[in-house]
Each structure stands twice: as structure tokens, then as C-alpha cells.
Image (tube, rainbow, N blue to C red; front, side, top):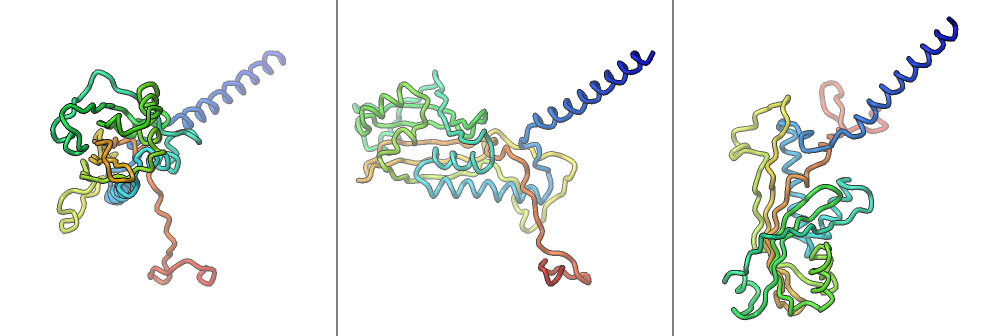
Amino acid sequence: MAFCSSKRIRIAALAATAIVLGTQIAIAQEPSIGSQWLNSPTSRVEALAVLQTLNANLLSNASATLTLDRWCAAHKLAPEGSKIVAQRVGGQDKPADEHIRELLTVGPGELIAYRRVRLVCGDRVLSEADNWYVPARLTAEMNQTLKTSDIAFGRAVQALNFTRTNLSAKLLWSPLSEGWDMEGLIAHQTSSLSLPPFLLEHRAVLKLQDGTPFSALVESYTDKVLDFPVPRLLSRYRLCDGHPIHCSKENG
């Protein structure tokens, strides 16, 4: 009987351990996705601030690839050391129209290559891009790399020390409704903030150091750029006799 009792105790202990481990695994695997952004005024303002920060970073840097590298690392969207790679999207070729040829200053008979990609960091697609470029203005090695690998365009042509001329930057979604600054925000504390598939759209031209254009881009940034836990608001103030004061050693 003692043996049976001891056996039952061990089985119970193992079961309890399994429950604890199962709970830990479930917590570890719980995705930190956009659903963590609450549909509240504070969360909406935070989302807009983060989105506009990304927008400003992209507009102030020549390479969207390198900007997304830094964004992905800073917000822990992929394992440490991950870099942006380009997933080629086939079967959706878009021949360069007259407008693209004008942007790239090429005649009707000159070759323009087309590349559609999804820029991915880890398992998250951060943007989708249409890219028309002039092979004759790149090196043979760059052209071969672009044809045969999943390297992102900005990384492949980085040695050109190119510049970027932004043509437009469009916010496809705003977490704040029009007129919120006059009419206020409605609080929905219990629901999650619903994000559309695409949040930003940029159009740009990349140029050589002498100003010659070699690439025309349309970049659409996805909701995955916000796919991290909501920023915490850490107050450095406390109430003293009903008035907010800055926390310090003197104030306790």
C-alpha cells in the first residue's frame, strides 16, 4: 500500500509539473501582435507616435532596407542578428509605363527591369515593394545578385552610395479620427485596436552620386511594423498634497 501511495504521489507531482511547464510554454508562445494595442485614446496616440517615428526614419534615410534592419532589431521583431531579406513575388510583372520611364529618364527602347518583393525580418513581412530599375546603371555583379538571390535591393546596391528622392509619403491609416483634436477621442478600453493590412505608402526614386536616377519604388508598409507589445507609459511624477511633482530623492 505504501508503494502504491508513493507511486500516486509521484504521478501527481509529474502531472503538476506538466501543467506548470505547459502554462510556461503557452505564455512563451503567446504572440506579441497588434491585438495587444488596446482601442483606447492612450493606445491610439501611442500607435500614431510610433507610426510617425517609422515614417520619419524612412524619409530621412536613403535605404529603406537598412532602416527596416534597425527597426526590426530595436523592436525585437525577429531573433537577434536577423536582417531584412527579400522574398521574390513572381507572376505579377508590371511593365514600366511612360511615367516610370520619365522618372528614370530612359527612352522607350532602353531596358527597365522589374522586381516585386516582400521585405521580411524573421517571419514578419514588414513591407511589399514594386521596384523598376535600370540594369545598365548597375554593375554586372549587382545585376547578377538581384537576379539570383533573395537579397534586398538596398543592400545589393549599397556600394553605389546612392541618394533617395521621396516623391510622396501617404499615411494609409490613422489611429486617430479626423477632428479628434477638437472633438476629443472616444474610449473603448475593452476591445483591441484593429489594424488594416497596410499602414504607409512611400514613392521614391534612387539616384547615383551624380544625380542619375536608377530605380523607382513604390513601398507599402504592413501592420507588422507595429507587431510588438504596447509601449509602457512610465510616470516620473507622483502626487504630493494633490499636486503632481517630479520624483526625486528629496521628494522620496
